[in-house]
Amino acid sequence: MTDIVNHPPHYTTHPSGIEVIDITEHMCFNIGNCIKYTMRAGIKGGPENYVQDLKKAQWYLDREIKRFNKNHTLPEWNKRITSANNS
Image (tube, rainbow, N blue to C red):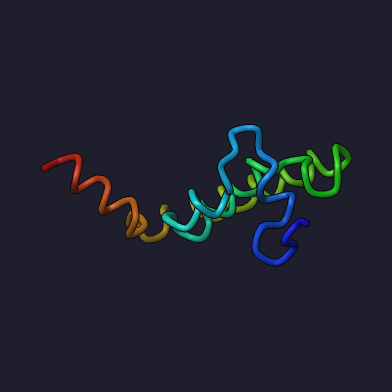
C-alpha cells in the first residue's frame, strides 16, 4: 500500500530512487523548491504538467536570483559548503 502522507508516489518515483526531500531539506527554500519541481516534472499530474512544473522551478530560481542580487548573501547551507571547501 502506498503511504500518501509520508511517501506520495510523485515524490518517490524518480528514476534515481532518491526521494526529493532527502536532497532539498539541506537547501534554502527557493533552491529546494526549484530542485523539487525539476526532479518531479511531469510525474505529478502526468506529462501535461511537465512544462508547468518547469515553469514553477524557474519561478523559484528567478526568486532566488533576485534575493541574492538584493542582499548579496549566500544561503546558510551554501555558506557552510563554501567555508568547508575553503578550509
